[in-house]
Image: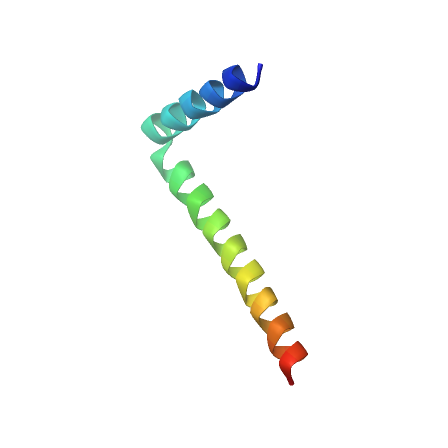
Amino acid sequence: MKKLLAWGSVAFLIYFMAFRPEGAAQMVKAIGAGLMAMAQGLGDFLTSLMT
């Protein structure tokens, strides 16, 4: 079951990028922005611990 879901996710991503490249680009940008916000928050937290 886990393997089927993994392959289904890969197939969906390929389909999404092929037929909706603008939407895929926006999704990647949003994920990147979220990861950057989490990294910034972690950095702020660690900085506040050290001071």
